[in-house]
Length: 286
Image (cartoon, rainbow, N blue to C red; front, side):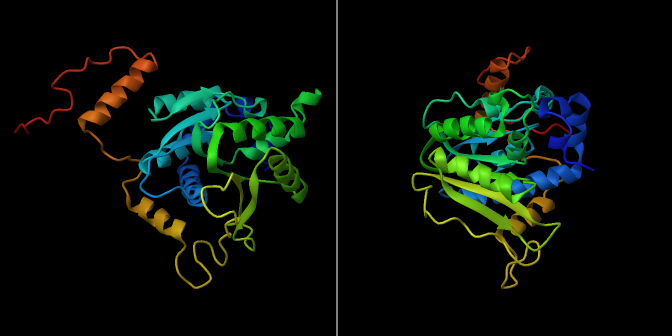
């Protein structure tokens, strides 16, 4: 079976039915969680510090939920309206934008402390029309140039994607470098057909740390060469121990006020008014 990006443009492929089917698939949920945790490790953000992240191709918010749990504020962009509708139904925390990333971004310079993208970059490698502006090199150039501007200096952007050839990797990395990025390709489990994952780790300025491209994970999936469990595998196990499909139960006053304000901005009706009783703990009733 051919990959989705070879069948139709994303806004068509991910219609109402497919968007809900994709989001409800537990295997997709686990893969998105694993890849998001790994992308955050490669992003190398300072521990215990707030950060404003851009989720490129956020879809229905599966990766955004991991960003929430890790304590980050985020904004998501996606080209598929049906995916964003599902994200709104799931009440994700991040602000959402309907955006064709191949047309570039319009964010103010230095807006974000970092960016992640899970299974999106390969969609830019297909020309939808014969017009020169629809060619992959042209779309990639606009994408990386405007993304570089939107990231602060120093910072990083990490993309997990599915290239079909070395030529595609070369095209992507060369255009990213021309846009001003440093960095390169990170391959996890290169000798495994099943577990192999390709990441593009890009730096703006110093990249928030060392200029050296991080090393990929090797050996068996989730196990380092010394036999210890890889860091992101530990996170995966921690995630599995959590209640399935349930997010953190956060019911303090600040969280409730933030949620209500988010609903008002999105035009949701019948949002209760704020009062001194908002978020107040009730006595148990027997």
